[in-house]
Structure formats: structure tokens, C-alpha cells
Length: 288
Image (cartoon, rainbow, N blue to C red; front, side, top):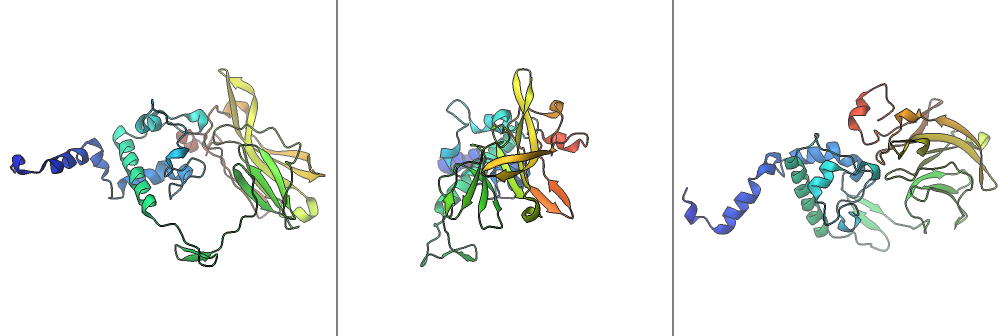
């Protein structure tokens, strides 16, 4: 091969694409597998966010400033605010491949036409649907329980409010709910009704609970579940369902869980790994 006959732009492209991150082969599926294993649970399959921010919208990247690039942010993390550290788990080359992957997805998302309504009906992904705004004025609504009366119980993660929406009206927050630790991805999360709610009126809440003790001067917490009733817009009759010893709590703001499912007279729930993935493999710990 005679390099002096190769156009300059081809040489530049070769240098850029044959660097250390090329081992992850963008477009072959390998970087997609890295994303699915380490990123999807927080940022969703479409990269539009869930527990974590959207990766397609640069305006949501509040954690990354001019003094911190993407690679260092991912490797070092900000566990207390919900971003685990991946140093020792991912290499710089792998994180760089993720950065390119995200940029490619951003470009593809920018190029996609928005669904256009035809007489109020949208078509997307083989489905036809209509959008109707039910409740406005909420910050980050996290969970909804449908009441037999036709109303809704709605949790707001960051404001840690429990709201009743009834007869077209969003009522003020229910008073007296437990103390919630609004930390990173934590806050007031799941609300669910007992299967026999119409007979016993039990309502279950899952949230990030703050420990009364500190570790090395830092607040710590863990997922907690209680149940109670609402009488005259006040939370009452509270009973503790699940908590862990303080020594198992963490200062991390990542991965609290959770989901509540009733089946065969049991309550099933998920508990997050709290930003420590390896602890999920330890059956003596509640993480994950």
C-alpha cells in the first residue's frame, strides 16, 4: 500500500476508528451488550431514561460539567447522587465505545420524525393510540395506584408527596406519611393497594428510608416498606413491613428499587443493589 496516494480524510478516518476503543466494534452488537448489562436498568432500552436521566437529551446531563468528561464521570461515578463508579468494571476503551454509541443514538433520535396525530390518533411502532392528559402540576410522578372509587393515588419521588386525584381534582398531599430520604435516585417510590383493599383499606408504600445514625459523618439509608390507611386525608395506622439493620445501609443515592406485587397471599418486592453490584451476589446481604 502506498500511503502517499491515500486521501488525507481517509487517513484521518482510519486513525480515529482504529484507536483503542475499536476493539469494542461499534455496530457489531458488542457495545450494545455493554450498554444493556450496565446502563439499561437506569437509562432504559431507548436511552430516554427512567431511574437515571435521558442520555439523548444533553440538557438533562446535570452531573457533567466543563471540568469532568464522560469517561471520567462513568469510571469515577457519583454514587451519592445515583451514579455508580465503573472503575475496575469497565475499561476506558469500553466507556469510550459507550460514548460513541450514545452519540450515534442521539443522532438517530434527532433524525426520527415525531409521531403526527391524525384526528387525535397517533401511529408509532405498529400501534395506534391517543394521548390524554389526566393530571398536571406534578414534579416526578413515580407510581400510581387505581382506587376502586375511580380515583388515583400518586407518589412523587423527589418531593416525597403522596397525592389523591379524585373527581378531576388533584388534592393536596396526604399528611403524616413516613419520613422519606430524598437522595439521588431515592425518594417516595411505589404505592400499591392490598388485594382486599375494599375490606381492609391497607395501602403499601415503598421508599428510601433514612437511618437515624451516620457512618463517617454521612447520612445512610436503605429501601423501606410500610403500610397504613388514609383517613380524612391523613396517613394513619402505620405498620412496618420491611427494613434492614443500620449496618447494611449505604450513603449511596443509587438503586433503591422497587416494585410491589401481591400474589398467592404474599407480597413480593424488589430491592436495589444500592450502587454496589457485587453485593447482589452475596446472599447474606439484602442488596439486589
